[in-house]
Image (cartoon, rainbow, N blue to C red):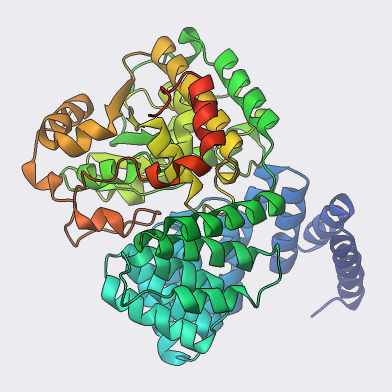
Length: 530
């Protein structure tokens, strides 16, 4: 029989917790929901609310434990599965998320908006085939929902199905002409020629958006891409400059934070610190690091073509273990507070946690790639936690790398990339950090020149395979193969094979790039261009 007095108390506590959540009084909210759980330990909504409040209080491990408790008692109602899916992604638990989807039969029971959102979540963790199944079901049920058509097209692009992707993106634009992300993804899909570009359509939409808004930034980058393909470089630069200016104001970059973080990491990661005792693991991780747009996707594509290697894509799986060790929520690959807390961390536990959490991505193969370029800052921690891990560092011409960063819309992943001087300064910090890794652990990191990889591919691949402990396989060099997903900014270009003509794309814009090029010269990372 229900206890009316108990239910009344729980209701009162629930209302108190909800009020505190609205007021962002996270401590009071956590207290209210924890009091409910003391009275009724299996109160599932209170577990989820407590997890959210505790995370806001930066009590990462308690918040994660509450989520795991909720997962253990959850039913398979689509709304609940959706909420659990959001939180499992937040805590970097992709294997648990995929298992939950399968057990709950979510794809058969959920409504189209939930299917689309879940497809986005699953795509973000790298399982593009499952994401495709979810979003295809959503578009079958609701063909006029433009968000579903957009995501359908994006996932198809990741899977290399470009013609189908174009069809879905155009369908999205017909349904919602002012949806900027669809125009932006379409602009990246292939090179556009004189008879099939969308310049006037983009200009018309740009004229309607609020100045200084995120849609203006998306439309500007899309317009830049298409004008660049048409070699209308003056107009293309105007669009790029406009997009960068908007994004810089929307999401300012704080270089001081980067400088302090990189300095602290170098201080912590001495030769003695990064040294690790030998240990056998279930498989060998291969970490691919470097600047964004330095060729990391091409390198993973080659490695992923090897019969002994599973291409794991870009994930924050290693950062997830650092969060647990530091009991701290960091938004990116690393932050200063996490670095400080890692000084006395249990790196054996970090390594074993990574191996176990990423086992599903290895798919039974003896090698797994992890291609997250910002892991360059974690290289010392990776070496200490995973003594068998290989670390591959892609090196590309500074001007080529930086210009490619400047013209790529990274959302919030690389805020330094929208300002020329900030971008050059970041490149300088990155270069200094990589030199530190060469000094403190010279045998753990292999530098790979992008130019060598594209111009002398077989010899360079042999050197890479040898460093990783892999036999040479010529078929791995066929990066244009249809198999496998590529969920990065290079998803379209890498399908074209190994391209040797991508250097000096910045040259037509040289007069506009003086702040970037001059600063790179001042930093000593390149000679002044002719």
